[in-house]
Amino acid sequence: MKLTIDGSRCEGHGRCWTIAPDLFDCDDTGTGVVRSSQVSADALTSAQRAVATCPEGAIELKDS
Ligand code: SF4
Image (cartoon, rainbow, N blue to C red; front, top):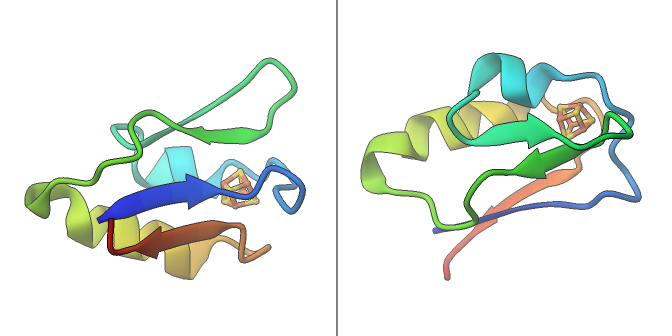
């Protein structure tokens, strides 16, 4: 699975990196970024939780 963040929608709430710090971080402007776009099977549940929790709908998880 491939994980992406639409930086134009991200408002920097930080929920993604709070929920899944192994998958997300923030850049110098406080915008969410993915640490690695490829999501392992072990990390899939965390990635799905982040998608569901992002208040801006900025995180996308799709088949790679
Ligand atoms: S939860 Fe969504 S809006 Fe908040 S920092 Fe992460 S991607 Fe951005």
